[in-house]
Image 1 (cartoon, one colour):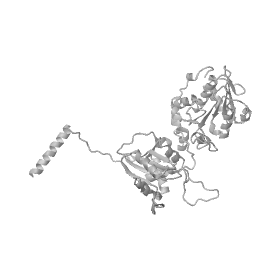
Image 2: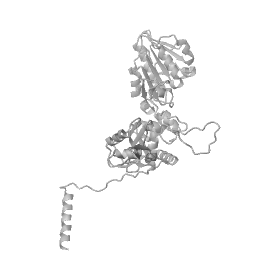
Image 3: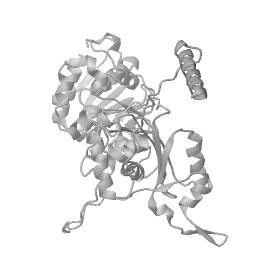
Image 4: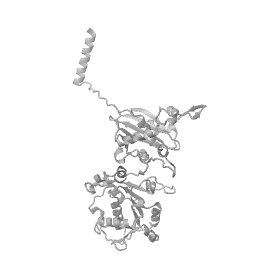
Length: 440
């Protein structure tokens, strides 16, 4: 981009996530994306815009390693923005603004500088302490004093905790805006064969670098699950499809309820969920009934819920009993752990299990449930065992699959409209049959 040109004249077309990031006015704003999604371009365009629109601004673009700053970020700046960079890695604007490119080893040199804005490029390479260090430098009157982050998907790191879970490393609340994007959002600006090339990557690399997944890759239980293939846009579920309600009960832990439907070909769709902790059974039962779904063939629950361990008025009762008192008749599910995991993985692999994008808790747990790690020096003699946390929707999904849900059957009977020619012919045939019965 030549000096003085505005963003709108860029030869590239801004996609929607880029536009949201560049023109956001949030104090903390992060764009997280895959390879080729245009996130780095969005970061540099935003930095350039802030220096153009705020005279006497002092803006910082930070990259952890000097080699990456030199070979990638500076090269991209000259290619996309076009403003010259001097020998001190600064860009000077006619309105008095200065944009500084720096790397991690330069942080101490800027500890007394008042910045009007900052961009952490490839922020997953840095840490939360770096973020707060930069926040402390944002005190210049000229500028937005926004802290922007550009990052790749990189599992449950500090960026995930801040922008997805909204909490800091010491559990204080954090308010930041997250914009997610993937390669498909930027398809118009990429070579025609680029996306097809990424589809040749190993499946787990596709999940992170093509489709966009925060899942930690190592030791995942449902390793056949694919964000690209098994997560779909919601659609209206036909009333005629068989449905199942599956519940994993919790008190301090969340109670997870999955609503599943089975289509004419036997494919399974998780189309709705309820996920909440700290509520009584009457509350959860009310939520389930209020959804009002029809054609429910089965209500499944963890078989341990049939144990009569609670007492009232001298009588013992179970969790299943209490749900029954609230109008829901649950059946103990098949809780075979390894067989259930295997069957769910098979369904994911064969593209027979799908989860609506709106079921965010299910997607999060399914993509991150892991096998327990062996302690150092311990030999493995027993079967693998998953971690016993953040698995509530995973258990509910196993219950559904292990129930071997029945394929929905289409009603192929022909409905004849009253008053039609066919209806009149049918009436005449019925009268003829009555006449024959009367005289035979």
